[in-house]
Every structure is written in C-alpha cells, then in structure tokens.
Length: 399
Image (cartoon, rainbow, N blue to C red; front, side, top):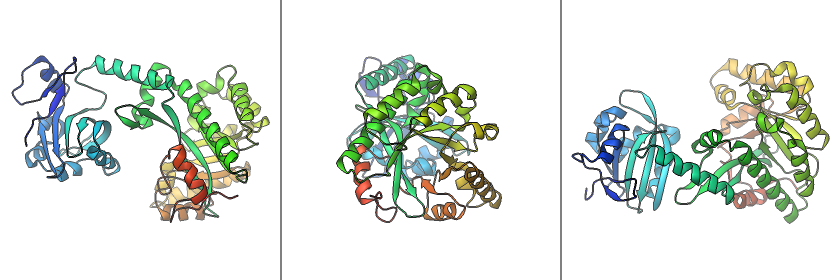
C-alpha cells in the first residue's frame, strides 16, 4: 500500500505510524494496545501495524484481507464497517472476536476519503491521547447539548393485530460534527459520569412532545398516534419533575394518552415510594405510564398493584429466547396474563424477524418494536412512515 497508517499527536499534527517509530507518541499508542490501520477499499485490503497478537489478530494481520478482518467483527456490529466508505472522520465501537476466541470491545477511530481509510484500532475506553481525548469528548458533549445536537429519534411501535404503526419510542442520538450520528451506547456512559443524564432526558422528551404535536398539527386525524420517552429514577424523584412534564404536554396541546412515560423496571426499585407518588400525579394528568424492560428487575411484582401502569414492555431477552426455548415462551405467556390482570397492554421488545413478530402475537402480545420494523428514525423519516408505513413491514398510522 502507498501509505502507512497515520496518527495525530496532541498538537494535531498528522504523521505515519511505522513499525520503527520510537517517538513518545507512537510509544504511547502501542502502550494503549492500539494498532495502526490502513484500508484500501477498492482492493479490499487492510494493513495492521503494531503488535496484532495483543488483540488476537496475528493471523488476520498476516493475511491483510479486509474480508478476513470483517469476519473477526461480531455479526451484529459489521454494519459499522460499511461507514468506512463515507468521507470524513469516524469513531465507532465494535465487538472484536479474536483468533483466541476472546471477545474484545474496541474502537475504530480515524478518517477516510471514500476509497481509503486510515486510523487506529484500539481497546474501547482507551485512547492514545489519554486524558486529552476524555476532556475533548466532555467538552464536545456539553457543547452538543447547549447547541441542541442531542435530539430525539423515533423507533416505530406496531400493532400486531392490524399491522399498522401505533406510535414511537423516542431515543437519544447525538449529532456530533465531524463524527456523524453517535449512538447512545457511545455517549450515555460519559453523560452519566458528567451528571448530564437528566438534561439529556429533558431534551429527548421535549423533542418527542414537539414532534408529535407537529405531526398531529399537520394531520388532525391522527387521533391515536403516540410517542413514548424514558425517565430515570433520579429524574422522577427530582422536585418539580411531574409539574414540568405535565405543563410541557399541555402546552403542546396533546390529548390524554398521547405522551407515554417509560420507566425501567430496575429503575423503579430505586425509590419505589417516591416514584409511586409521582406516577399517580402523572397518570391523573393524562400521561400514560409504561413499565419498560419487564423481566430484568426482581421485586416489582409486589408493587404492580400500587403503580398505575398502562403498558408493559417485555424485555427483548425473553422475546428472542422464546424462538428456541419452550420455557421462555411459557414465561412470555405468563407475563401477558399478568399484564391482563392489571389491565395493561403488552409490547414485545427486540423483534428482529417476521417469525418473531408472529410468535409474539401468538403469545398474546399486542404491539411489537424492533429492528424488523425499523431502527430509530430521524424526525422527518418518522413523519414519512406515519403516512406511508414501510413496505413489507407495517402500514401507516390509523387515521
């Protein structure tokens, strides 16, 4: 290949990472367990520079085949490699299955021009510039929040009986300049360490409310379409949470039940008495309540009679497991019966195939959500599927 993989030192200067480079910065890169990466996309070749054995890639390094490297990436993460062909900066996390069968969480960080890509492969959570990179990420996230770049994307929720779009769950995405769209797994841990989860939650809920109000304004016949968004236990217990959310929903002119608040089962157990009181206030004001990820907690059954939930979402683990495990199907059926006893409807999470959707319906689930239908959509994309649905997957919303 024509060039060696390049690195940027703390002053931003670009230079190659050669095997014989003994500069302090190159030594720091190697100390972090990183490899230099250069990819020739037309030739489908990859050059890995450094001690590849540390990441379980010695044989892959020798083969220099991009296909061989792709096989070492977990199947669920291979889509991230497709973004290497896009010009510009890229920083993604993937699971690497080494030749020693160990699974490692790694980052690909670098830049491409559409035909080639140059950068680093390094253990996730580490970087060649250490604290400098952490400070840069913190500043960028803080700036992104201030500039309104942490926004609500919308994942469809489909009625299993009619095959129509019923609503959306609003999910956080960070539109980071120079990096593109950043998934929540890649910035929410940092946000939690910075104490920004509540601010992100407010931004996502505000975006969800505003988007639904706009869609309903454009088409008043959308009487049953809803959006749901999450809140943590800390947010729920904070003074004024209920009043602020109720005021936002009313100001947007949304009817009762059009906005749904999702509360994770595990979060629920952190301060159940305070959360029960807040939930009662929200429910009385017309905000529907969703018990999220049911099955991941451990003691909520004893409190279901105190919590006025409208919807139960069965955790994706059970939905996936039921395809191969009769015991898991029995658990799903039991959860559905339990929900019925408390007058709740049921959403199956993590539906990835048509067979999963049909099985969930057969077990009594009312709604389904997952990548079979769509991932999280930008607001304009979500607006389009409200009217047209997605061919072969679901119809538009009921008018």
